[in-house]
Length: 218
Image 1 (cartoon, rainbow, N blue to C red):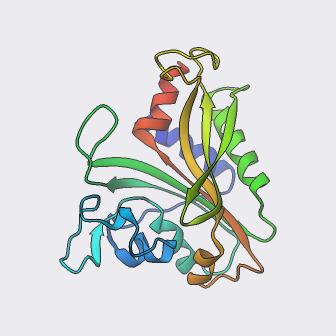
Image 2: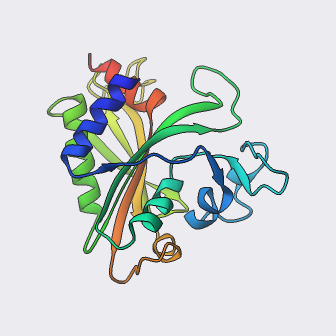
């Protein structure tokens, strides 16, 4: 895992990203509220989240996305380019595809005139460096509370070339990450004018996405 993470970090550092680390014991305000996640969202349930305090104000972070907020507050006005890897925690039963503790990498860019084309171009360039030239990707519409529009990015299976095989469960594609344009409310809640600036963000799981796909290309 460390080898895959170090390789990804080197690529983003070469693109001008700053690596940030953040707390694993997090405030609900950063993990949910300032990411535009509603009070009644299922991810806030005790059945999904490890709360540290009875008032549900302190928890073990469920994602690395709080680093979006912490970066905006710490750095202030854009341009901002950050990559935030780290451990996250969810109340999942241990099986082949789930664990109560796993690793994520969060990436974010904020500047003037940032578009979805910048997001797609950057991620495609990164995937070619990680998995080899000619790597085929696709972007599918999705929904995340903190991005609008949102998407999921898939990589074409290197084993079967998109035909379908056991590695990709017959789909021809392997789901890689979630991404999208940062929701204007998220920018606004962190003190950045959404009328002047825009940005994109993505989150990728290391164990079940980045490492799994890396293994299929070797």
